[in-house]
Every structure is written in C-alpha cells, then in structure tokens.
Image 1 (cartoon, rainbow, N blue to C red):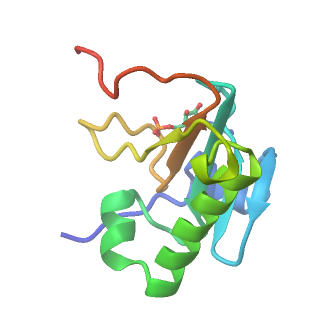
Image 2 (image 1 turned 30 degrees about the horizontal axis):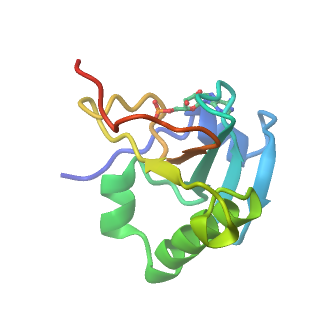
Amino acid sequence: MAYEYDSENIFAKILRGEIPNNTVLETEHCLAFRDLYPQAPEHILVIPKGPYVNFDHFGAEASDTELADFSRTVARIAKEIGVSPDAGGQGYRLIANTGAHGVQDVPHMHMHLIGGRVLGRILQQA
Ligand code: AMP
C-alpha cells in the first residue's frame, strides 16, 4: 500500500515558509523547531524536509543520507540545548507518534525531543 502525503499539512506549510516557526536548527535534509504547545521546558520537533507521512514511511523509504542526517541532527540538538548526558545533561525522550493508535495529529513525519524535567513513565493508562 502506498503512503499518501497531504502537502497541505501544517508542517509542509512551515517547510514552504507559509507559516512562521521558531527554528532551532536547519540542515540540508531536516528542520528542527520549537513545539507551539511545549509539554516540558525543552520540546523540539525535528522533521525531515522530504514528504514523509510518518516514521513508518520515513524509516522504510528515506535515503540513507536522509536517515543519517536526521539521527545526527537529533543528537546534535540534544547536545546544543544541554539535555544530552554526554554534554552533562539529564537526558531526554524521543517520541514519533505514528498513525491512529500513536495518536498522530500532523501527517508529516516528526520526532518530539522532550526534556528539561523528569518525564515520568513512558505511558499512562488510557
Ligand atoms: P503529534 O500529535 O505527534 O502529531 O504532534 C504534533 C505536534 O505539533 C503537537 O505537539 C503540536 O503542539 C505541534 N504543533 C502544531 N502546530 C504547530 C506549529 N504551527 N508550530 C509548532 N508546533 C506545532
């Protein structure tokens, strides 16, 4: 089954410059910006510039170059904002909500990088 990308989603508009964003870092293949409704002192969204619907799509079809740039960008941001344990920080959590059970709202692949406080256990009872 082919992935269907909706080019009118809000992150596609951000990538086209139609909606403002609070950019943290931009690379050849990724954009990272602050979440509009942060859940913790540090809450950054990292997105690939390519039209990937979710992690399922990205992990399956992105090029090795895009995948490497994405991972390196996440790790670099964690260091730059000071949450990386390697940079003396207290750690962080990565979340890529995917599809209906993942409760994904925006249909453009994104990784939440969240930190700056103890985040509790990964899941609460539904
Ligand atoms: P998800 O539920 O994983 O799809 O997460 C979507 C995230 O995008 C939420 O945490 C929203 O707060 C965030 N969000 C929605 N619109 C914007 C925007 N214009 N700029 C930054 N973050 C946004």
